[in-house]
Length: 598
Image 1 (tube, rainbow, N blue to C red):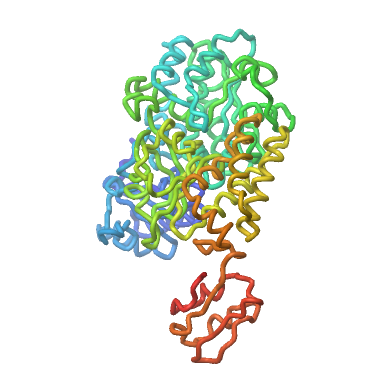
Image 2: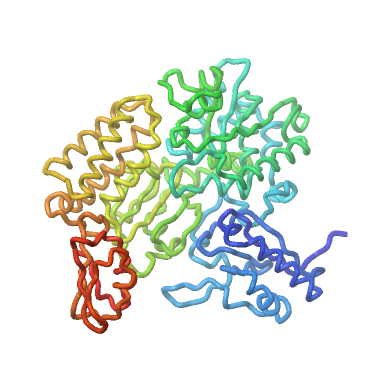
């Protein structure tokens, strides 16, 4: 007879929580529960990532769904005593709503969670990703059974088309249409590929899904393989994702053992298997033809299109490539129907989108929201507002290929068409919130530095153009900006966009163009006034000690590596600007706000 537990403690075992010590917390919980003789009543289990990365290590206690944050090994004895022996809610680890100064025990009542809609992440923090039976227990592989035994390839493709699912990797192209092109292309061998390389800085959407629910991706690929007539699939995964790789390998082995991969799956006569290919982290391999070149053992560089991969892709065979999140949606569409999926989102952007919400926001983590939600709702209702009560300045959306959107357009809906009108793109799902301490010229330089470094060099507009943009941005942030530089940046950006071979070059100037469009005054201040309004660009700032506020505590003087601060104890100090290297240590160490940035 299966044991029934009165309490389940589900500990997050995603990369963020593991790095913060969640597995040690789990082991300590098990020991303490055994110490109290409660192992027959209480079960401790690990799950995939909970999503609320800023709060780890995390545990959710069922049946009530109480959310506990920032657990550590030292807290475990008290935690077990209060929760399991005395039956009390442990307030020390509850989530607090800062604005209302209110503790919120139940996970689904917390703004970060209650404003999300889960499709690709439907199993979030509910299953152990290493146990296939737990995935099956939540309707896992039911869609595979239906697709393989009850549906023709054409019927599968039609259902995906009717759902309105668009590729979640950045392009937003119709998934069903891409599958249809490949299905209709004649070929004795076809391939279906999953892009799990995820090269955007600050992005961890694919990593999250692979670590938390790898079978959802396998299932989506199996269904896609049946639809286009492919018997072989490859998952192109970053070698820097060791936990994702481990869980993928486990999931593939379990699926083979259960007859869900291999020959004659579920007695349907359909053969399909999946192999992992480890990517070296090249950003350009996010472009589909460059990724295919890499799998073929060549240097990852894009090739001209047409022919498109659906006609001539991997090893010259018809090929479909989608990203992790796209495949994770497929089983739910087949299981629940295209009408259900298309009821979510907007008229032209159906379903939900997963975002990595990071930056100067209180609630950092992985979120899934319906298409059409506003940036305001994401930043304030889900993200909990701006850290340290600062003002929102900008939102970078779409990663290094996206754009910086100002606070003034925060009510913009997040869907493909609305975001493109702003000059940015939805991209694969990176979203960085920036407060008013950020310099937008420096932000543009940061992203250009990344894309210029990641350019494969095949086409001149991208290889040379991004370098010219970067050098011009460096000149501006280092005080060498000249009249006409803004116009030069705009002209070169448009030339790169119109003449680059692949999406890397075609979108690389977006951070430059959007920051000029919305924050032109900051460029002008750098160029004409030789000032950085945000106080970030070292060449354009000075640290000044206010003699009215300085108490002569000596902290700034002791922390200065250049010994450029003079003054006696209990008397105002002075910074020698000719020696100052603008490291900011004096500013950071001052306890009396006596040092200002000019």
